[in-house]
Amino acid sequence: LFVDAPLQVGARIALDRGQANYLVNVLRLKDGDSVLIFNGRDGEWRAEVSVEGRKAADLVCVERTREQSPAPDIVYAFAPLKHARLDYMVQKAVEMGAGVLQPILTQRTQSSRVNLDRMRSNAIEAAEQCGILAIPEVREEENLERFLKGLEKERLVIFCDENAPVSNPVEALAKLGNIQDGLVVIVGPEGGFTDQERALVAARERCVCVSLGPRILRADTAAVAALAIVQSVLGD
Ligand code: SAM
Image 1 (cartoon, helix red, strand yellow):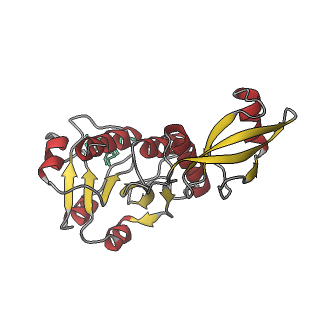
Image 2 (cartoon, rainbow, N blue to C red):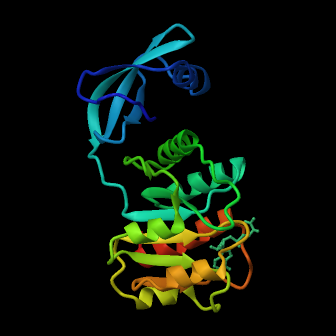
């Protein structure tokens, strides 16, 4: 469970109504039952529930169960989609190991106003779901060209392009050798990238254009496919 409070032995955390309802009425936890909590900074803690009626509950921090671990150095850069598809994409990208979520504005991006708070709460929910202690960073939207310019030179860009020649992406990445960390995975908008954008990305020194197979995937599916391939090469 994510809590927005400092964690240390004996710390008492007042839960909001939604969290209290979840613990007391959905999970049916009783006074003294344990729950694992994290805040994105202080590791994972076992806390005991202190129930106050049917609608309120506190937690008391008892012991640290895991040290804080850093977020994976994988930037997932994507053209924002609308509503439910964006929610899905953010949740799946976090589950698949993205440490930074970077919305990029491309020539064919349809949804240029991104609800960053909604992205953050989806990222937290996904981290809770899969036991990730570092909450992925959600960055403000950025124009593709400026985003590329701002990247460290040595950072490898994995550019997912349905027009790339179909070849085995796992082999293509494995051939590069040193891809332990410092990656960017880029997935484009519903309408794909323009030729101008393809040329812009391909002009980078450390860039590999990757095909995810002969079918054109929905952008949210491409997120999962691309990050699964990256993880299979990283071995995580
Ligand atoms: N119109 C669909 C949609 O609404 O999502 C498909 C969009 S597809 C053009 C979106 C992005 O997914 C592309 O820009 C590319 O980054 C990625 N993608 C989809 N299929 C791919 C493939 N076979 N190989 C590589 N990337 C792919």
